[in-house]
Image (cartoon, rainbow, N blue to C red; front, side, top):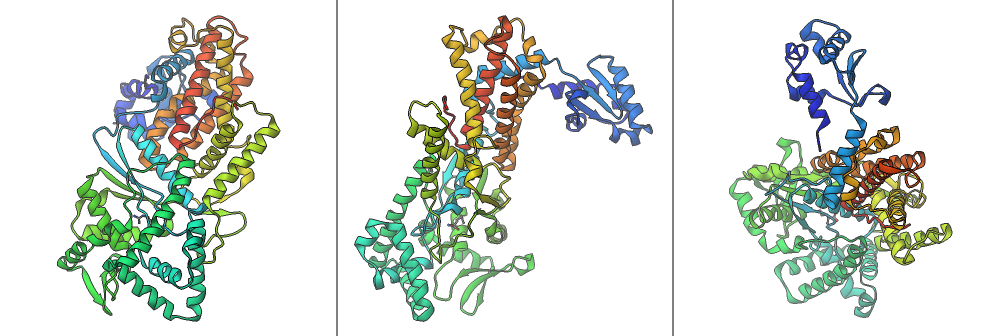
Amino acid sequence: MKDYKREIAARLAALETIKNAGLDEQGVYSAIEAPKDAELGDYAFPCFRLAKALGKAPQAIAAEAAEELADPCAQATGPYVNFFVDRAAYGKDVVTDVLSKGTGYGNSALGAGRRVLVEYSSPNIAKPFHIGHIRSTVIGSALGNILSFLGYEVIRLNHLGDYGTQFGKLIVAYRRFGSREEVEASPITTLLKYYVEFHGQAEKDPSLEEEARAAFAALERGEKEEQALWKWFRDESLKEFTVVYDMLGIRFDSFDGESFFSDKMERFTDELAACGLLVDSDGAQIVDLDPHGLGKALIKKSDGSTLYITRDIAAAVYRKEHYGFHKNIYVVASQQDLHFRQWIKILELMGHEWAQDCVHVPFGLVRLADGAMSTRTGNVVFLEDVLSQAISKTKEIIQEKGVVTDDVNEAARQIGIGAVIFQELHNNRIKDYEFNWDKVLNFDGETGPYVQYSHARAASVLRKAEEQGLDISPNALLGLDDYGALASDSAFALARLIGALPDVIADAGEKYEPSLITRHVTDIAQAFSVFYHEEPILSDKGDARFAKLALTASAKQAIKNGLALLGVSAPERM
Ligand code: ARG
């Protein structure tokens, strides 16, 4: 589609006034903004920055530029030159672009030929997959979708927390008071119970901690019995995680987690030692990052066992060597900021130039209305339960509302799960937020159900048109003589939001911020709702009716494409 802003920038940059101020086209382009008041124009060029170079007041410069343009669509208002676009031509451009590209509307080849790794979710096995994990899972998955839509080749990684001293604890707990039947009946709840029990008993009897350390060391040495227990815990946990991933419609290319790197560690501790980075501290090996303001990173404990950060160093090098990458992205809570800063610094100090291509994408906490969640106390809200509840609550709501669907269970699934994902991706990711059922499932707020409902409403208008025997294929909608019906305020506002979607997607990819898309599809849904209420669509006649149907079909497509990137489905009926 024509880049209107670019065209205005080119026209302005050609003016004597602007040239005299030493501003080039790119400078003009980035200065152009949306007018504070839509009545004043569609694009505004502020002249403040030119005042110094020209030695004139911005108002005078704006007036001069407008005079030089000699176009009734360009007017000086105070210090701004405001531009009006031809709304019908703009509307035609937008619908043509959307309907000819369809599900590809908003994509680009920005990342063509470049591979990006996105690591997300990465839960700890034998521990509940709880509501706190949802953010990494859905933010990461959405980023994968967005980057892939922008042309990157995306590889999706789950760095399972399947190693570490906690497995020593679990092995000891299982041996002391576990039963195979109990674990098989309900793996994670049971393992969690053992883990909690371990901590309870270890408070009274500290020798348990010692025993756990020994069990973990045995696991690291590859002792058969410890290995078998560990593998069993892992398999059972992964089964439970998979249920949740399936519910969310989320997938991975690899589940190589911490254990995968456990036998590849020596090379790195050797390398660190060879670089002179490793120092002895009471028998343990550390990297002293104090000179960089990052404290000390423990690399190897005095009993020889390695740590989380050691495995992350090994994992990064493995990713570079095995996959190669343009960017290596980690979607992990901001609580781990220090860990990732230490880790990147160590990679840098080891001389890996590609450390700068490793990106930690942090996010804030999610809290439930009734307090914090902690694994230690066993007071945990399982994600699977949250998703099942979302589905059953949605089913109640849609039955109450008398929503017409082909299959109420499938509709409840799409809307309920969609609502949870949408809510997670609605806030700027770095913000903490509180999970609240009333907000998540509100059909009228800035929610998933609301946006899905707008999509279904557009679908319903198009269905009715077809029932009336109208041809609403893209070909029929794109060959009109007159798109004048798209010049109304509500149609133009909607067209502009739809037209902005590709830039919003690119921006979301660049900033690793899916919420930009969540908010934008919400804006499109709201603008569609205004358009739908203000404009007769099916009852209109001639080209006007088809132009409005074209805009309706475009709004539907734009919402659907945006939601798809978030991982939210767009039902045809609601
Ligand atoms: N398993 C960790 C946790 O649950 C998250 C892992 C993040 N990824 C990484 N490469 N360190 O806290």
